[in-house]
Length: 363
Ligand SMILES: Cc1cc2nc3c(=O)[nH]c(=O)nc-3n(C[C@H](O)[C@H](O)[C@H](O)COP(=O)(O)OP(=O)(O)OC[C@H]3O[C@@H](n4cnc5c(N)ncnc54)[C@H](O)[C@@H]3O)c2cc1C
Image 1 (cartoon, rainbow, N blue to C red):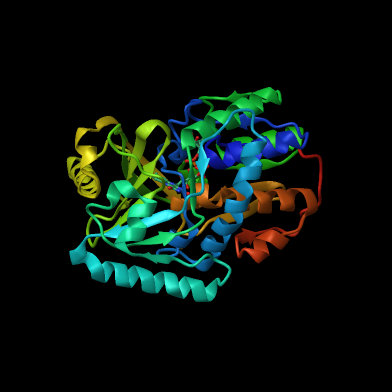
Image 2: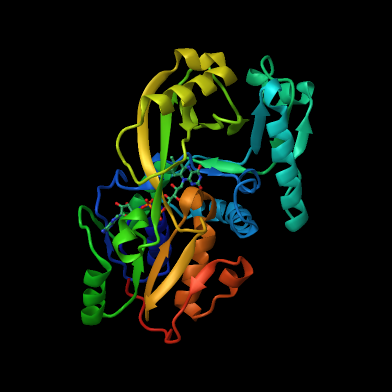
């Protein structure tokens, strides 16, 4: 397994739990410093994201929402997970943004009728759902069932679970596909390349989409669920974690630049958050972080079998947490049964070679 970010750790745990020997290498360290997964807000919001993505990603997100509780239950440490829905807000002058957004959700509802319907909120209903925001906003949209989890707790719990299964990760070991292939020729087994943007030398079409986030501690703010502010220039989300920790994000810039967050981005993110709740004025800035989302030209995830039993799994873009259980299940189905029923059902792009004969699952 190359890469122990989100996808690599998730797949490795499931393979190890099924009793397969697993070897994992990661270019960075155990805190996930080299991964997009460490910085992410980890919202699981297929309906909200349907405004900017394809129905197949929404379908993967809906499938994954059902899988996360099962996956988390199998880990050796608890991970904060909630499914209280998503709240969508806008300032009065941006009502046209809300109309546009609602029209996009309505189109998604027609394509995927099994998705829960958004609920238009009156001021009274908003006050019931999210009392802390009722003074500033008098309408909104509620997207039921959507979820979120704590990304850093998840990374830690996956590593701890691997350790409990006797699997250690070889940190600070940057490998190329060529090295992995040479290793495979000598030792057999599968190679799963989950290096995110680190796979770019072997998958040229990959690009980075830079995202900057602020992590705040705001004891004066209590929110029950992720909140998104629609805005023509500064759309933001506020994702509440445990103990009044909030992730405010995120910029979306076509660049692989990993340098620290810019003043402009931070001003925009924090001003928009302050406009949602004045309690953010006294919040403490714990962290300003930058990472790049690993993205393919169509902004969709893909799995490529570049040689027999050598899979590249990538392009999770801004949806890794939302869809990774679906992508992982499709990959595992392919490895165990040589079939792609789930991938086809979810329209996950899966390029396969003919020679997929099964062999020992040594990863
Ligand atoms: C600001 C931001 C906010 C986000 N918010 C959300 C969200 O709310 N919801 C959501 O679903 N998704 C979100 N995402 C997206 C999500 O984080 C990514 O889609 C996901 O992390 C991709 O997983 P991955 O395993 O493919 O890559 P990564 O998580 O980036 O992991 C790649 C791993 O490969 C390792 N690696 C790199 N090169 C090598 C090498 N040569 N050899 C060995 N190892 C290597 C790296 O060290 C890293 O650990 C967000 C991302 C960002 C940046």
